[in-house]
Length: 269
Image (cartoon, rainbow, N blue to C red; front, side):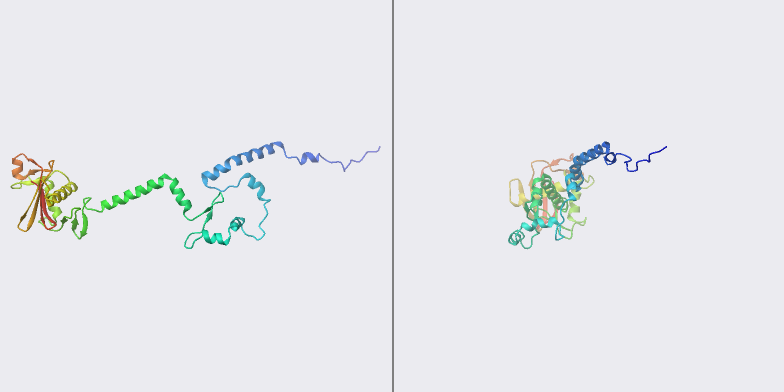
């Protein structure tokens, strides 16, 4: 009995079936490509990445390499002639750059445009000026006295506060008139305000009295000048033993005693 030998040349399977990619993988690849296409620009904007587009990935392998081995991005500037470069790049300036839309950007142009388009830049500039002004004011004693020398302070009206008196400094003596001393014999003028306010009252009364305005007086006493000025509202009261006996009456009058431009004392009376 003759048995036929197996046909060894017959294919074991369908070659076209073996070489065909399953449909599910095609679907997966398409979904991944779609997701990458949608997320690539968003990721670049959100995180500052430089992910290439899907088209760029597909064409990257086919892009011809530069013949001279240079970066193609550097060759984009070959259109600028030497004369143009000399005109655009002046000595002492940073080199010009090229924007994304191909426009030549001069030094600082992009920065100025960005500052102009960003309202917070102007706001920050105003805040910086405000902080500088606050810093200058904080450097003044009591917000208005400028330090001229060691322990010498000058007011805006030109009055000088220096060392002297039993307290050691004229400002220390002035502080005694910010509170009452009920046991002090006689009268004791007490200001209603704090030190910055008192210094403003002294400057105001001094300037008005020097100009002999109505409601002011000045006289000489033992080499010192006494300035007196009236105010429209009470600036303090009369304390001490006499003032307390009279019920601490309010007063609108100020007396300033000086030696030239040096303050000796000042108080309401």
